[in-house]
Length: 188
Ligand code: HEC
Image (cartoon, rainbow, N blue to C red; front, side, top):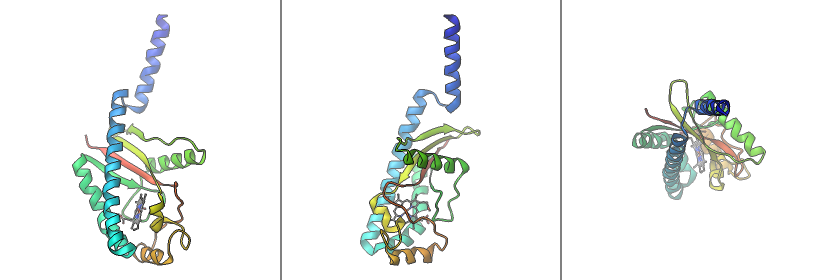
């Protein structure tokens, strides 16, 4: 019996070491990460929709180039975290995906292709930084600027985007596709 108890506590300690979080912390940081990602999405989306109403993609695309990362920098300060959007098909050349972000995107795409549930990931890295990752999925309204050219995205918008982002590879998506990840690092 004692052996079993010892073995059990040994196994539990292995599991706890694995993610580096206690169960309570895991819940706490998952909730926190989800709230920050949602607040960030809401703010980017509200700004984008205002620009689209005022001047369509001709206004909204340059706005995103100038302001998307500033908005995230402002929110990062407010939430005491580094808030980043990462992708394996980038438009902005100012975003550098980490190897871990690319691995998680790959994992999410794989889960999606098998119709499996996609959940946030929280983990602690070798430098003791706490990370939260969650999928960014393509919605119908994203297709205006990330869809298939001449199908769900107009040629006009494509040329506006190409003139500002000559190396853009962030098109060709369909609704529900994994566009990238929210990658949030909590400040110590
Ligand atoms: C008006 C056009 C437009 C719409 C609509 C739009 N985006 Fe974007 N998106 C952009 C531009 C422009 C950038 C590059 C911003 C920059 O330079 O920092 C971008 C960048 C991104 C990035 C960062 C990674 C990268 O490739 O630079 C993600 C993630 C993203 N968009 C997801 C979405 C999602 C999800 C939606 C729908 C909810 C959406 N976008 C709707 C224009 C748009």
